[in-house]
Length: 218
Image (cartoon, rainbow, N blue to C red; front, side, top):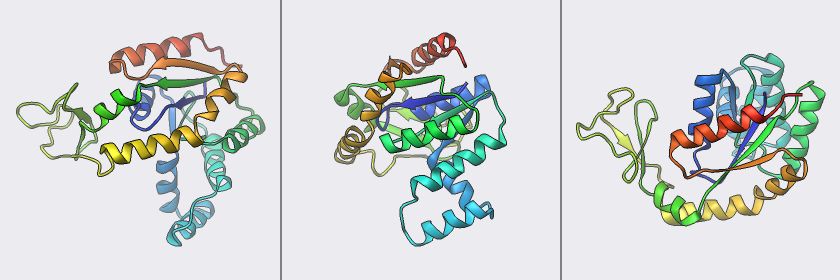
């Protein structure tokens, strides 16, 4: 089963993707992670990525699709989670063509809907464990009183430099301009399901499980 997680920055796509990896054995395809992995891999595609990044240039859609193709052809897991890709209609078309060419299907597109004001309040209160990346929030999941991460016991926590209101609103505007058209695109293809992205993590997990249970792989 292959799925796309859609939603603005901070909607919780990464958290939900990690849960699906752990519980369903799916493979998360995050553009950023794939680029970093490719840059250090020494493969032909990796050399191209390293050269582009060394020049400070933007990685083209063709390169990203090439990396995704490598992952799909390598196989593994019980399906793929596309996290952070596609971001544009052109990328959506390219991904559709790639899936068809490799004999794969897209089984569900899950939009994690959020209220912007609530999202800003949540993200500006966010911090992560410097040891394992576990996410905490001053409002909903504060750092334990003993100052230790509940996941790994680390005692150092950090906040992203761009987790401030001005930066977040800029990122939201960029998302709505470039990525939100995908909502209509996948709705027209009857792939789209909307869930409440600001619900409790466990509730979001249940909502996603319900979508995946209803999706029938071709």
